[in-house]
Image 1 (cartoon, rainbow, N blue to C red):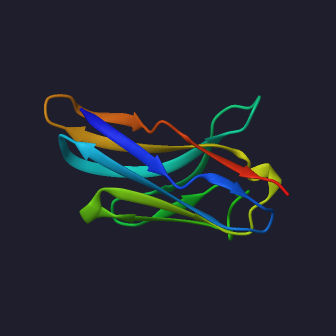
Image 2 (spheres, rainbow, N blue to C red; image 1 turned 90 degrees about the horizontal axis):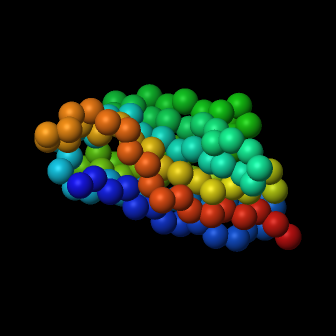
Length: 120
């Protein structure tokens, strides 16, 4: 009964920018930490960035200074602004959220993933 819907992926040239968004909907009592993860072909899923409900952020070393995570608590939405993109940023990007719902309690939810391809 909880859905995370991502949007904003696509193809971009090296050095370019893209913005991702992820909106949570459903029987949400409380939306806690949210984040973005990515999985490149042949690799495991890795943390990109996380943000607490209060706005504290954490980034993977590989994206520090280039990516910015933010959220709008009123809209149950988390964003990822990606600048100075590199070919090694190519991956499927997944939204993640820790959500407290009525009946289930606190659980971890994932979006369906959105493809980001950085190539000339």
